[in-house]
Length: 392
Image (tube, rainbow, N blue to C red; front, side):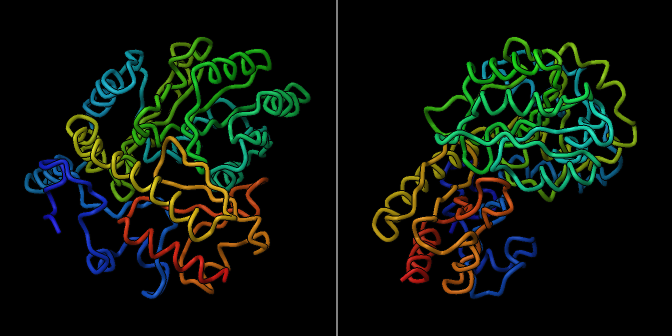
């Protein structure tokens, strides 16, 4: 296996660099939640070494003793440059950004800016489980707008959800997951423009969680929500966390459209200073210098999507899998296997494979599992073998 810092230098697939023995020495959630006989393909941690530019930036900061409070605009400047290079978007204004401890805490702060306790927050289910948990903790109520059969935004369902959310004239927000987790769908510009139009018509404020934006497959194009017509009063949360596996180095950015700058000014100062300074350093280095490593990762994930599709066709043909265009996750429809609403429980008990239960993703999640593709191909192969044995 290659050394810790070799990924960016040689552009080799980061997903092929660590052995399972090396991974089992990790102390993070993915590798410590279950016993050693379980293959953990659940939470969105990636089985990769740290990108060299990120590791070097952290090492240099520690050597300087640079572990105080965050300051400056290097992070949003790096993200703005990344957005120009990767998404052809030059609308990310550094002065319309605020540091937040991480994306989900930033989501809560954004919702507090545009809604009041008891107000409605619309989500496209099935969707990332913390959407439900964090919204409830913020004393807001969820209104679901289910995805269509094609796993894309159903504009009719969204229109209806917006109408229900605004009953009585109360404020409401739409928490947009873009790219979508767990389906891996990348929303098209026309779809997002239609979303902005519906939001304007109903008086709903859009808060976009765009944490997976860097992890987009070859041939797909991520469209920032704030880049489409009509999205000027939107808010977006961005981070390098999912692209470079930095969940343990927290740091996010709340980005405002031109008409939302006044909202951003009301973010409490305590929110920004609670962001990890080392996290800011890591995320800045990722966006500024981690492009080559990210390209190698995206290529590896494309390979793993094709591998998973072939393995399922051979060993579990009843499982329906529509490879996503983004994220490191796979959404598997296991209803035809006859394992009930929670097939993840069966795969864990009988096959010793840990997957995310679809039930936690809201309406439409029953009978599904989410599988983390960000691991070595050999582990995906072994996982599917075990899953097939659990069914047989």
